[in-house]
Image 1 (spheres, one colour):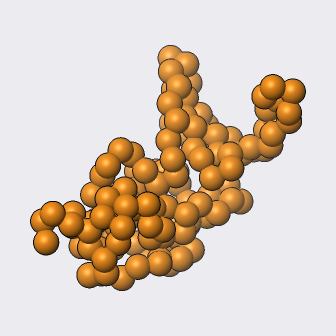
Image 2: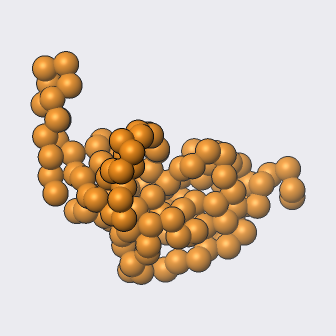
Length: 126
């Protein structure tokens, strides 16, 4: 669903979805979540979860582009995959530098929230 939020007198449009007790709000390339039962908030970048060696689906959606191939070198912050969710496009990025160890999805595939899509072998492990 599309929602409007007013921050400091400025209206913003965002997309929101309630999935298994978590409210997901997508705005300007960022994903915000709130546990609907406790009201606890957190902010997540699309495709990120700390400095992880995996790129995971931050929401259910469809993979539209894979921008890397197995064995390719990547830098931290480099775009590796594009997915579509809630009529919006999200570019997922590598959290760490290294090389692509495996790709666990295909273009056109519907993926679930939290599915590991790409595994990165850290640069220090080469």
